[in-house]
Amino acid sequence: MTHAIINPESLHNPVGFGYSHIARASGDLVFIAGQYASDGDGHVTSGDFAEQVRQSFANLGTALAAAGLDYGDVVQIRTHIVDHDIAKLGIIAQAVQDIWHDVPPTQTLTGVAALALPDMLFEVDAVAVAGSAG
Image 1 (spheres, rainbow, N blue to C red):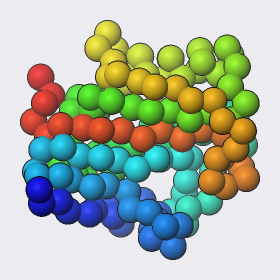
Image 2 (cartoon, rainbow, N blue to C red; image 1 turned 180 degrees about the vertical axis):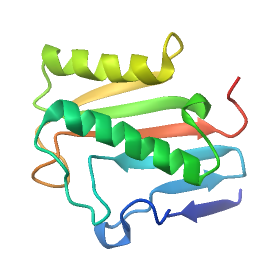
Image 3 (tube, helix red, strand yellow; image 1 turned 90 degrees about the horizontal axis):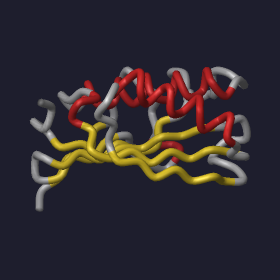
């Protein structure tokens, strides 16, 4: 199985953090690393949970575009939430609905005590299939 690693210049350089943004396997399967509310230098852009969710999904869209894909190609997301509660679930559900409308991808939500950086409250990673958007 061949693969390619992609780190788009439009997102922060993740190599110093120990990961890459995108891996494309055999041309069809595309794995997007956890995206968070980062700026171009990898710093968290806001302390507000809803804003972090919005920016994280925007960064996911940027990563998808760098691989020649869009949200419609996503078949699975995994969301990771610091101090998960029902109010945060509503914010995430609304963001997913805003992007995927009535056909969301599969999702696994994990409540966690902390994420990689102290200010991170939310992270989303994804698996996409090239050419799957209908």
